[in-house]
Amino acid sequence: MKKRIVLSFVLLVCLTLIFVCLSVMAGSASIPLRDLARILTGHGGDDTAAMILLKIRLPRTLAALLLGGALALAGYMLQTFFHNPIAGPFVLGISSGARLMVAASLIAAAQGAIRLSSAILASAAFLGALIAMGAVLLLSSKVRSMSLLIVGGVMIGYICTALTDILVHFADDADIVNLRDWTVGSFSGMKEESLVVCAWIVLAASAAVFLLSKPIGAYQLGESYAQDMGVNIRAVRGAMILLSSLLAGCVAAFAGPVSFVGIAVPFLVKRLLGTAKPLVMIPACFLGGGVFCILSDILARTVVSPGELGISTVTAVLGAPVVLVIMLGRRGDRA
Image (cartoon, rainbow, N blue to C red; front, side, top):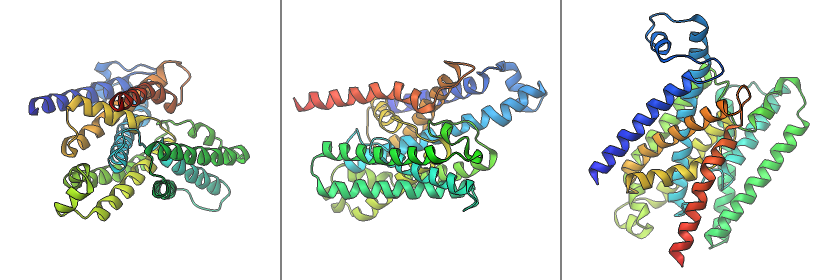
């Protein structure tokens, strides 16, 4: 088992490095590996290529790595919280709630009501995610069936999406012309200030999740067992809610909607590792989410080049079949 885990991490790290290199090299203006090495080491290189690499592609790739990892961790915690592999930020409407508040903030900033910043966007997204999560928790207290809870979460997501679409429809101000592009999801346009704020939030929240590895591991075995082990169930559940909402909200704030990553990646990583222990699942999910989103971003930029697909479109194509496999597997287990 230990050998399998070590090999799995080696594979994930190698895939991360490979896809990072491919991401910064691929595009309408390709950058050869030789020029890439020169630019990154400060030993010359074409000025135009250096600007494209350092100002556009590298920040975009780092954003995909960080936000992909954040979304996978949020999905893993929600699946653990609800004891259901189908639970995820997108399915439960949490990402949609965050997106609604971000859209409202962008419109308010365009009207001069607030001064927009990366911190404001992140705060608005966190608030929206927390409100949607609260609605899901309220629903979970009223229904016992997990399938009904999932359906309720989907409905909450549809309501938030409909409200967002209404805001976008009436938001014709020139200052928010990019709002429509943001609603389809993208890692592009990540500025240095936004990347720094994103990195601080994601890395701090991810570290907090990792510190919860042992309590989460006990929680996976049942609340009674966790209480016998001295785990404060209410505190752990509260921390999982806050951290999953913060991570999902951060993704919505800086990249817009990104679907299915929070469900597909934890499932694939669990199959790769052969274990569900949080101590190894948490860092592996972060790496796996980064790999998944960088690959999706590469495909989004290159499949219809010089055009570009929405990132959520690509993640849905890659992630939805995994969700179907999960659902069929669960049905087979019940048969």
